[in-house]
Length: 187
Image 1 (cartoon, helix red, strand yellow):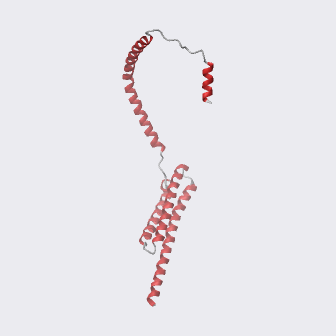
Image 2 (cartoon, rainbow, N blue to C red; image 1 turned 90 degrees about the vertical axis):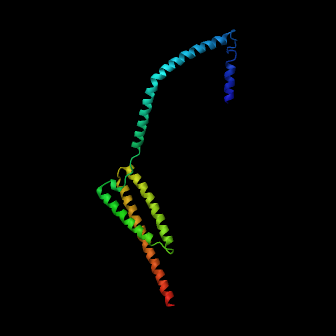
Image 3 (tube, rainbow, N blue to C red; image 1 turned 180 degrees about the vertical axis):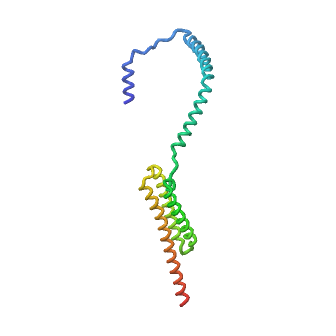
């Protein structure tokens, strides 16, 4: 299709092209004119270049500073519960302390019999921690939306529930092991 358009264009312009040969010495005259224009342009450019060089450096510095300033302004700090209110700060501290205590107990209970339970609990806690990080971003973007705050508190409570449930299961495993040992000793 493009070839057809070009072919049609050349057919329409047929006979209208300038095909005369320039007179002798035309090339020399043309080159000498170019050389004189080239020296004029270079001198004008060099004078202009001296004026613009410091101004361009200042402009580049200003642009760089503005771009750095806007980049730092565009990345708002991610908020957590503590940044919303003093009460929620206490709530966050309470949950964090409780989770850390339960987590320490869980890690102390690690044994060959409970390894699977502990590893599974840690995986679930990692998933909940990642969800909490997303909730922090949502809180920042939503402007302290109460639904996000409730979801964050619920996330903390779920982590505690997971830890308590696993610790209860570990206690049951210990009791079963103890009962098996007692039965073996009586036989």
